[in-house]
Image (cartoon, rainbow, N blue to C red; front, side, top):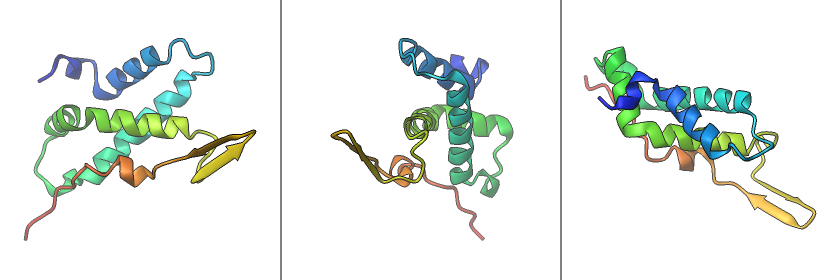
Length: 116
């Protein structure tokens, strides 16, 4: 198991993002923590662990080893869209932005399926 597992997956992701944005005066650690927790739940749900016999420890290890970056990416994606929820694009004062969909960010996460 990776050394970071002792800290906790969500805590490590939050620490990395906090360090990444430490010089951004607009950074809000509380909002980022919410986004990390939401991203964790989305990835965990998408994996459909309930279709497996994985223990909590195995689930955490799988999420850490295989989906650390996915969780971080979704948290960052949602943090970046904070205040612009449900917009596909935005144009203001000559600046135009458009976003990929959340499903595109989550695209490489494959769910477990139950075989009967």
